[in-house]
Structures are given as structure tokens and as C-alpha cells.
Amino acid sequence: MRIGILALQGAFIEHEKILEKLGVESFEIRQKKDIEGQMDGIIIPGGESTVIGKLLRELDILEDLKNMINDGMPVFGTCAGMIILADKIENDEKVHIGTMDITVKRNAYGRQLGSFYSEENFDNIGKVPMTFIRAPYITECGPKARAIATCNGNIVAAVQDNQMVTSFHPELNDSLLVHKYFVEEICK
Ligand code: GLN
Image 1: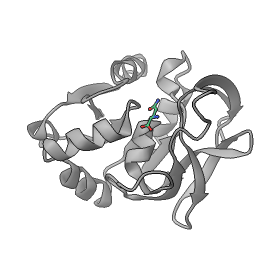
Image 2 (image 1 turned 180 degrees about the vertical axis):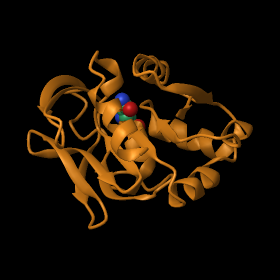
Image 3 (image 1 turned 45 degrees about the vertical axis):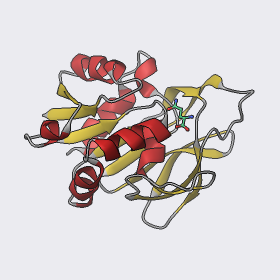
């Protein structure tokens, strides 16, 4: 298995390290030619969604990624990556890849509560560590998507066929559980 990690901005190296611990090969996506090779899944990391969206457009890979995901390419978006995949953003006019049937709110916990940590149930795998950094959450899961984790009553993870998103940063904790779930349940 070979997973491409979008490496334009934000927390991508941490994803590489987690995949390495799982024994999964990864490579960095930095330009258009990087998505031409064989791959079994894509990770869109956290960072700043406006910046990542702008770079995806400038590098002319936004539409390619959108088509690949619509054709079934497994994708995992964390934090800003979740915003990039959402088809509606409550407090931003610009939708980016927009393949997932969810409405998200950026910086949903407010600027004061920039970062926090919690441990919550994640689908059928039990409690996982969750690190939130100026995180969005899902205000509405459309009929195509399914919520798989909540924190303080807000939806913080969802899946939709070949797509998976988390508000939090699973790559910033030692647990391999969430990435293992992506590899085993979404990339299968
Ligand atoms: N606040 C960022 C945004 O709106 C997301 C933060 C993150 O990815 N940690 O894009």
C-alpha cells in the first residue's frame, strides 16, 4: 500500500511518521506530477485551509484530486483537511475540493479555546486521543455521510464511502488507531 500525503503546508511530516510505524509506505504530494503515479489513498493534513486551498488551485491539482476522490480514491482529511473536503463551510464562502456531504464551521471553538485535548469514542474502535488546534467541527452531516465521533456534543469525525475526516489531529499523538482505521476500513 502506498499513501500520498499532501505536503504543501501544515502538519504532514507527522502523518508520514505514523504511517511508517504502521508499516505503510508514503510519499509527499508537492506538485501535479506527484499525483500521476500509483497510490492507494491520500491524506490532506491540518494547517490553514485557505492557504492549502489556494495552493491546490495555483498548482492546478484541485480538480484532479476532486475527480480522483469522486472516482473512489480513499482520502483522509484532518482539521484543515476536513475543511478542504467539506461541501459547505458555514463561515467561509469558498468551498475547496467539496466532495463530502458535511457542513463545517471553521475555528468553531473560538479563538480563546485554541487548543485542547480529549479522549473520546471513535466508531467501533473505542477511545482515541484527540488533539484539537483551532479546530473546525461538523455542524451538519448530510445523508451521504455518517458521524463516527463526537466531543462535547459536536461531531468531530465522519466517514462517507471512500472519505474520512477528523476535526482533530490524530498524527500528533502516539496512538496509531485512527490511521490504522483509515488504512483498514477506508483504503480496503
Ligand atoms: N483553523 C484552521 C482553518 O480554518 C484549521 C486548523 C488546523 O488545521 N489545525 O483552516
